[in-house]
Length: 208
Image 1 (cartoon, rainbow, N blue to C red):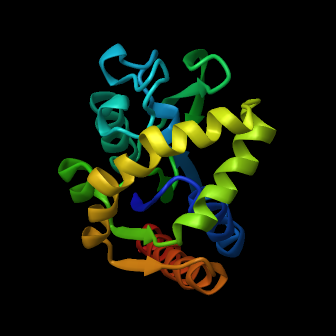
Image 2 (cartoon, one colour):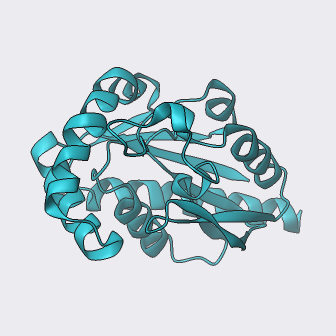
């Protein structure tokens, strides 16, 4: 499997970018995996900031499960990916079957954080988007999709999102093969073209 990793700050548009790639690639041999699904079943108490879970610290994720399942996908096997409920801040009981496919697009704030995972990635992408744009996008998302209040979103941004971005996340851009900005249509088309080449090569190998 050809594995693509897309990292970037909260609200940088990672999922939207991944969906554009899938649209432009136009193949059922391309699947999409979210790192958000791999938050620990319940937020670690030692990571709480002012009585709120810190979802922006690397230790908030279930790295052993994520590494294992990415290796499974890389080897051409299907996985039962976990699902996460951001309203209750807990892992759901249901899972989502992912793969096997020729290509997987994996997105998440720390997609490029773990060295072992970076070794699995065939293409590493970082979305560099200005902080004000990321904050506005996060604000709209958390109000509409996660039922949060304006005050709680602003407090979380100052208490954990911004400091974690500066301390842990921003530096992972150094590992990227491609850095894209706010405008992602052209980069998505470039990545989709690469995917089409990978799929064509795989098809020719199968026929040989």
